[in-house]
Length: 327
Ligand code: HEM
Ligand SMILES: *[C@@H]1O[C@H](CO)[C@@H](O)[C@H](O)[C@H]1NC(C)=O
Ligand SMILES: *[C@@H]1O[C@H](CO)[C@@H](O)[C@H](O)[C@H]1NC(C)=O
Ligand SMILES: *[C@@H]1O[C@H](CO)[C@@H](O)[C@H](O)[C@H]1NC(C)=O
Image: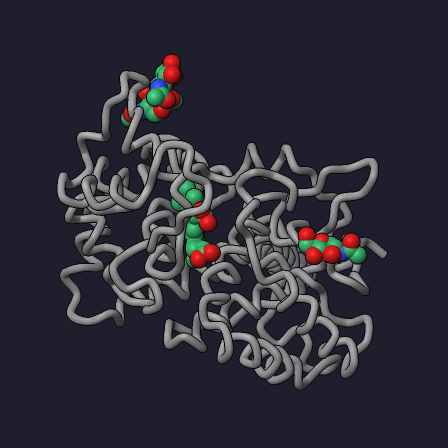
């Protein structure tokens, strides 16, 4: 019948519109992406990562940070791993990346994966898996990592400088930065919780201590006792001293939110989460929930969101043979 034929055509068209929508939302990533091509991938990665983390747990924070720095610049495409060449300053050479560490872990994991599944798994996916495994291995949250990213071939230092949020940003700038990569205000607060682990150098904080508005003043939003403590640790022009991000920098816990709410957030960008009703509400929510379960759950969800930023899939990009070099 003409009518039923017409209706079924409409139905097929609708189906197709839905399937296209689904593709653009999920971007083609899939937790089972390597099920057939590299079934033991997750085991290989976790095993190789654990060899480093068990010896040097302090590598976990920079490995988490590496995934963030990869995703915010050209999407999660492994561009942060590429080395500079004689004609190009790569992202690694940019100031916000100067303290990134753990590239040797990525390289070791990649070789272990290549032995078992040559030419199949992207460096961008390895960065995402290692970030998750590093966090889980130090008893932080776990989440399922979507896979199927492909590696980019371009890495430019100036893009890292422009795209990575700076510790001197206010809440308006932070929200804009996260929005520009498709992340929500909630993602901003939850992922800032990554600062529950690891360290910083004094230069990220010094303006708050010595010359906040250019008049030799201090940041009035800092708790005075914490300010005094930081001033004992950091000296003007200090580029070597290390500070802990919160009171328990080895433990993935909700202490970050406690310190922020007590005006003891280390960076202006941490303190800024109190300057907006929406972000402030999320900070307080993380505190008021008994234990860390809701923070852990939220963190996994936001990490998955971050892992979807600007990914290359399908026939785009390549599968790098060595993570520091394009093929
Ligand atoms: C919201 C904007 C953010 C800013 C402005 C920012 C800035 C910074 C800065 C300046 C440092 C110190 C680096 C050093 O001096 O060695 C740092 C460390 C760190 N960041 Fe962030 N960050 C932000 C978001 C994130 C996110 C989204 C994550 C991950 C989910 C993250 C994870 C970390 C970790 C784990 C460290 C410690 C690194 C280590 O121990 O070596 N940060 N961040
Ligand atoms: C690539 O860069 C890493 C880290 O910056 C460095 O350790 C390594 O030696 C470089 N590799 C080569 C072959 O230049
Ligand atoms: C944030 O910083 C920008 C750039 O310096 C400035 O224009 C804006 O007024 C600041 N916003 C707030 C809320 O402080
Ligand atoms: C503080 O900042 C002002 C303005 O940027 C600058 O002129 C001055 O030299 C700085 N003072 C110190 C002690 O760094």
